[in-house]
Image 1 (cartoon, rainbow, N blue to C red):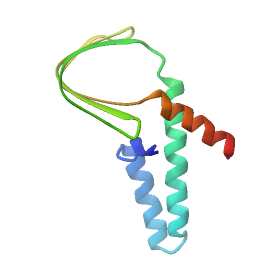
Image 2: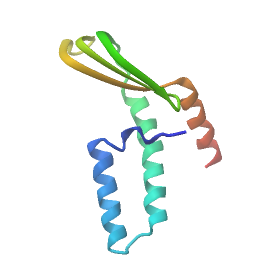
Image 3: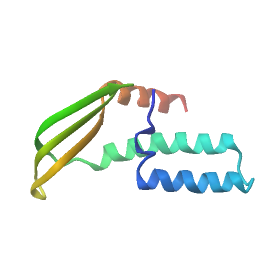
Length: 114
């Protein structure tokens, strides 16, 4: 199972860059870099699931979608998003990345092991 959804975010890229710099300076091992990124993956997924509680309605023309390792990725165009707080938001493009329930269950099982 891959939880590495947010490694390509600004935060994920920055963390990886710092860790690789420390590894290059021989201050931490390659194993420590890998373990740190794994912990980041699990923690960011947990925290994001806690903070986003507002509802939204999304209307778009889905141009393509993918499903792999319990992760759905949807691409759309001509997007209209209605939220409780911001009202209506329009966009030309949309990319939604979402995990299916199986991934959340697996994450909860892994937390019990640690």
